[in-house]
Amino acid sequence: MASTISKRLGEIRPVVVLGASGRLGGMLRGFWPGEMPLVLHTTTPRAGFTAFDLTRDHEAAAALVADAGAVICLSGVTPARMRATGDPLSRNVDLALAALAAAHAAGGGRVFLASSAAIYGNAPGVLDEEMPCLPVSDYGRAKLEMERVAAREAAALGHPLTSLRIGNVAGADAILGNWTEGMALDHLGGGRTPARSYIGPRTFAKVMHALCQSVELPGVINLACPGTVEMGALLDAAGLPWARRDPHPGVIPEVALSTRRLSAHVPLAKDAGTAAHLVAEWRDWQERQRT
Image (cartoon, rainbow, N blue to C red; front, side, top):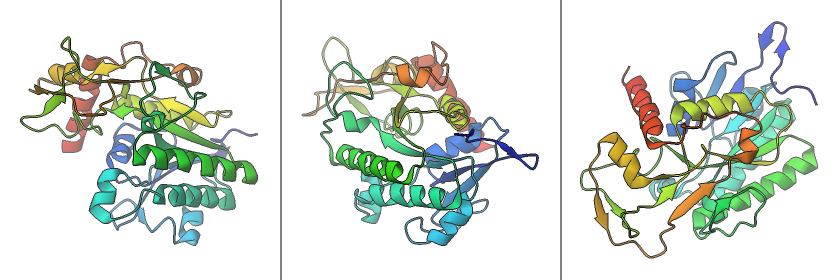
């Protein structure tokens, strides 16, 4: 297979970002290393974006991704979006299949789907891509179904596809991204708070840039920095006050994603997942939003 990013008539093929108007899309736009231009999609008119419904306007979708070096599909339905719009979580499957169909029909490159660490549920230990997935939330189940249906379709079409099981992204998470006065965290005993695998916004964009240039990739990759960080430590590093509360029923103490598979394609700094580094990247992103 030829490289998904190649020069044609002296130009480097662009990367199309579907659903680029959200937080993750903003991080890609803000920290994209350059070289490959980004082509941006959204569902509502916005300057600098091409607007259409991915699942309905198939001609517009095919035209947008025509000959793209890679397609990053961030379009999806989260629990918050479901509450706000009434869109069902099952729409994640429809969006993934629409992205894949457009890329295949138009000769676009590898499709990257935004999946979630939620598909692992409450499994203990370090979570790797080959282990059985038993999600405990409707969102996790919907994302796992998206992965499975899209993988079957990609295999039938012979089109390259990679689902990215994304950990918490600093600034797009429920802690830094949604901090409010009086925020309380589950107290797990011994001073501990829930721990998660994280990635900073700049590192997220760097990783995606590198993956879009990779020729051979597996069908599933965890996307996070090595190790975990406690939520309390993250807020402490950011200088944001928080309180302790009794743990909610069903709280997951730790979600530790294996980064072995990712590291084989993208080298990551050893301190990239530390609270200090994550907060520094988050503050950098905040500053870029203001300018």
